[in-house]
Every structure is written in C-alpha cells, then in structure tokens.
Image 1 (spheres, rainbow, N blue to C red):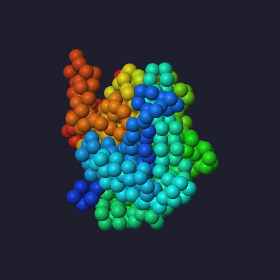
Image 2: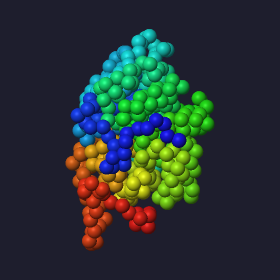
Image 3: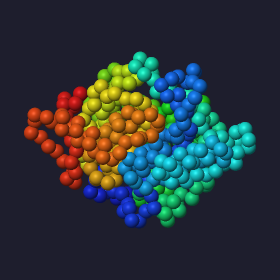
Image 4: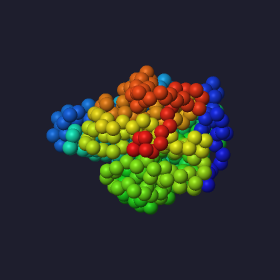
Length: 400
C-alpha cells in the first residue's frame, strides 16, 4: 500500500512542482565518497591514484546539474577534516549545492570519518574491482533530526527527491533518515525516486537480505519512481525474475515486464518503475538497454545498444537515473525519458570516474542517431505523449 498521497496526477506519469516555487529542481540524499582510481593499472600495484568524488545517490545530482543544467543539491554528512573539505570542493566543482552536516573529527576517525572507494575499471576479460572503505563514516551516523526536512521541502521547496538503497544500508539510522526525508517530501508534494541499488556487502553484517528486504519494502511505500535491476527487485522487494540466470547470459525483457507488473500491483504508489538491461560480454563490451513502466503508457523500451564499448561502467546506472528524471521532469513523457536515460548512461560509461562528462546536446544526438539508424529504410517516426521527438515504443520481438 502507498504512503500518504504524493504529487497529484498531471499531464505526464508524475506531476512536478512548478520551478518558480522551488529553490531546487532536485535534491539527492546519500553518501559522497572519495574515489581513488589507478587508471589503466590495478589497485594492488598502483603507485598513484586519480581522485574523483562519487556516490550512488550523489551521482544522480551531479548528472542533473552538469549534463542537464538543473538546480541540484545533495544532503550528506562529512567528517570535518582535509579529506572532507576536498570532497566538498569536488561537489562544488560539479555544480551541486552541498547541504553538509559536518561531524567533528577526532584525529583518527574513531567517531566519524570520510568514506574511500578504491576502484579499478577492468579491461577485456579482467573485470572491474572495487574496494570500499566506508565503515563508521559521518553519513552513517546522520540522524533524522540533524536536518530540518520540513523547511527544506516545504519552505525552500524541492521539486524532486532522489535517494536509494546504498544510503539506506549504511546503518539503522540511515534508513530512519531516508524515511524521514521521503515522508517530508511526499507531504510537500515533492516527487520521490528511489534506486534500490542492492549491494550484498553493505547488508552482510546487519541482517543480510532479510534486513534489506524489510527496510526497502518499508521505504517503497513513499516512492513515486522506483529504479532497479532484476537483482535489486528480487533481493530488496522479493520479486523473482523468471527465466533469467544469475550471470545474465540472456536478456529477456518479457521476464522483467512480468516482475514489474507484480511489483506495481503490490506497491500501488509507484507511478513509474524503470530498470536498465545490461548483459556483460567483457569488462569493456556490454549490451545496454532500458525499460520502464507507468500506468498510463504501460511498458516502453529504449533502443538496444548491442556491443556497447565502455571505459568505466561505474555510475552508468546512476546516469540512466538522471536522464530518466530529466525526461520526466522537463519533457513529460516516459518513452522520451527512458531514451534519454539510456543514452546518458551509455555516454557516461565512455569516460572515467563515477560521474558524467556528457552534455545535453550529446545525449540528444546519441538518442536521435541510434533511433534513426534503427528506422533506416523504414518509413517510421514517433513522438512522445507531448509531441517531443525521440520517443519510441517497441515490441519484445523487435528488440530482444
């Protein structure tokens, strides 16, 4: 069952508050970590690292700001030391307004510290490797009362809140913070999106998959736009995907459709459910597509990108989410939104780091070019619900 009523229905799948009434187009809630990247080398043999900022929820704000030109903020917590101030500087450079709760630093990180994420990209048969060092971070100690949620969403105004399962897994308090933020957002008429983003390592020591399911099913009551892949929906919400093996050796959109239909039947507050469809051939070649659902449109799918060459897969799903959110907020129909999300995710994975380096013009061009190639030799053109181009709906036989 859904929680208290969120935004009223409007012309598109979700109704968004007017921009003039809000300080922010989007606020994301979650951890921001320092990523240490050995480039083309390996963590175990590295002698130098390039530094990026990143975080599952933050990456969405960064994409919406830098690629799509939206007013974005992030609510997070950092230990007040030189590393924390470096992360703040990187957030500011990304065009995101940092709403940071600063935790006093005790000199060794016993009470609060900043998260580190060592990530190598992989190449060919060598897969990507990540080593997270995020225990006892300041963001995991954040409490619901540390932020005035009613002021943020009510007085200042936020059109869209995005958070997710990575943040909710950091501690029992983090799940309470997420629920407090989502509840305040819904009461203010702010659209709430949530990326399930299941990470077994984060839940392992605090109750495992049973705890993940308990927390995420509780938070799902507040969600308007739910994002997640097949593992996410299975582990976090308890919906199995029929006919898909653990290694994703074959992508069957029909199986995903059946799963989402079961999910939206139980969680009737979902106005949109979306997922990326990724088949990993090698670390640098993936098949890539996306699918989404709304009550009004049913299922819509992006054009498939078979054999997509990638440099760094980290953040691809987050960039899909930011493109999807932009499409829903500004263009108003789901088919266009899922195409923008898939194109943005594909572009983001061609550059290093968690966050996008793409531009809106590139997203528009990539979406248009691929669709044009698909329809080459066929007299077909399609437009979205509101007359926006680059919105296409295909049958399962067409794409898979």
